[in-house]
Image (cartoon, rainbow, N blue to C red):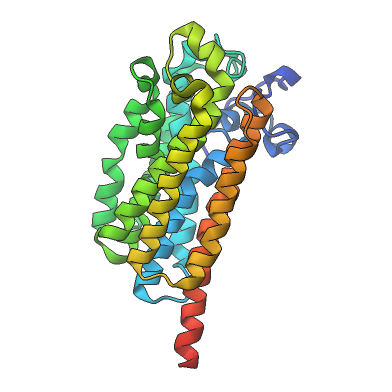
Length: 324
């Protein structure tokens, strides 16, 4: 951990507006670390899960193709560490680019840079430190996976600028945040094939869906500032668009499992994921910020269901092999 300067105890308002109540950063982290942990969104861990699930899905798919009994535990750990640090680095980069905009938006003006908890230079140094940790993790994989991981950096770097130019920044976020769907498979097999490509397409559609829900929290401020999002583009028709994108997400994930050789148990558990997406759409209220945040965060559970479907398929196949 980099040497972080001592700071006075933050006032209550220094907690970020959309942080999880009673989160560990505000409650237990060392005072001098709190601004940096908030900058990396450690007080809002949902983003780590949303970045991590496509990685673990892809790794599990490769295990299904390989006939393994469970996903590679070392790779699971590496992807978990990578998701934490690279999600943090991406958030810092996003806040550096958006520092002036964030100061004008109710939900984001309490973030460390616009609120003055962290200077721009401190944020830049912290981002570099996180990227170096991410690079150390990436170098543990084979050369094909390393090059593939580096190829994502261009998309990650351009994402924060997209809401200035297009109503589809969520699509660019999907391309970046779903990249892990392309990483787990080659970590095991050192190549890409149809299954991870289908998974990537499904994950991109899923990201567009859940981030549209998230963007509804900022739509009034975004409109006043001249920023764009799918929440503004879809407006009252958001639920119909979510039906489209969540259907594409489910179809892509299901097709990826079948292409990797998954069996009936995968399809049975996967039905629970479909039910979860239907619940999100049916209960969504785009005019209620708390409702939107709750439905957005619920996608952690969707990711867990999909992963469980893949792991269950691997375990059952191993049992059949032993009994056979």
